[in-house]
Amino acid sequence: MNAPTQVPVPGMRGTAGADLADPAFWRLPRSERLAAFARLRELDAPVRFTPRTGSRTPFHALVKHADVRAASRQPQLFASAPGVTTPEPAPWAKAVFGNSMVNMDGAEHAGLRRTISRAFTPRLLTAAEENIGAVARRLVDEALAEGPGDFMRSAPSRMPFEVICDLMGIPGRHRARIAARIDHASRYVGVQRRGRARLRVPGRGLRSLARMQLEMAGIARERRRVPAEDMISALVRADVDGQALSSRRLGAFFSLLLVAGVETTRNAIAHGLILLTAHPEQRALLESDFDRYADGAVEEIVRHSTPIIQFRRTVSAECSLGGHTFPPGEKVVLLYASANRDASVFDDPDAFDITRSPNPHLGYGGGGPHHCLGAHLAKLEMKALFREMLSRPESLRMSGEPGLVDSNFDNRVGSLPFTFGVGHTSHPNGPL
Image (tube, rainbow, N blue to C red):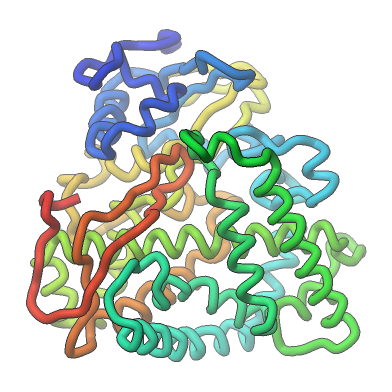
């Protein structure tokens, strides 16, 4: 059964339906967007959305857990190429910056992923795990010394960046510049620019990315001459199908690891602080026996917040999924933010429950070849940092309204006031 081109979804403020192709939809309160996803999940087949302006192509929204999971595990039918984000990377950008692994399929993707996986040697991972606890302690110590402020600019928010830089072997003298370039490159991904931001010079994000890759290429040249026990050294000595990794391919991977690995985990940590402050009973439970509940808390934070909202796929061969037949070339969007609230999979899906079990969320992808390569590392970082933030005599907590960024790509936190104190507080507007 084929879905209608567009269907009304009652109850949407200011619109006749839940138009996921309209930037205005992504500026609605998060609760309204989640309610719209819930109504879309009740339909018999995925809905097709057509952008009203610009050159972007129509797409079908996969909102059910089963559909998102199935599409993720069938890359031969739902391809990542030519790109998983909107807009898709231009051919010239791939030629200049290299093609990101998230946009690859088949043997090309498998070969690169295998090479990178081998670079995560047991010795390197053991050292990283030992380092994570030390980094968490240092960053929370710095936050205590600095005092209350904006969590997104405080020391603990640097946790994923510091860990990845240590793992890769990026010298300290490069880190401030690279951090600034990551911020510039990712600031407007999935965000409709408004006000003065519309006047920004086009391509500034790409220039930041190019400068970062040039800096990384310089570090890679140093490691070729003098290898060290770090990931950059392992990768510059690695090869794919008998050929050494090119500077562009290395640069593309470094950009993916630094931008995606840093920003997604950083946002997950921020949402964790929001959720644990807004749900004091869950925070008290976690604090009562951290080792018992930490793993469940991390999984539930990722499910509830879903740091990456969506990725796109291109249908490569005619196929049926979720009550609809897709022709080749059709675009589909995998809405992880909707799949993770599917009531057919999760009891009371809007509740935040760190004891939820099982918890088959799709926060790191739906399985298959593109399952997040850094998921294990991200979970270790979150556990170590929350252990430190919650265990101090004056533990860290949210102190005011978070500033959430309107994005159709990631569940980004722009600002988050925090303080240190004892006892439990609740969010001024209730649970998020």
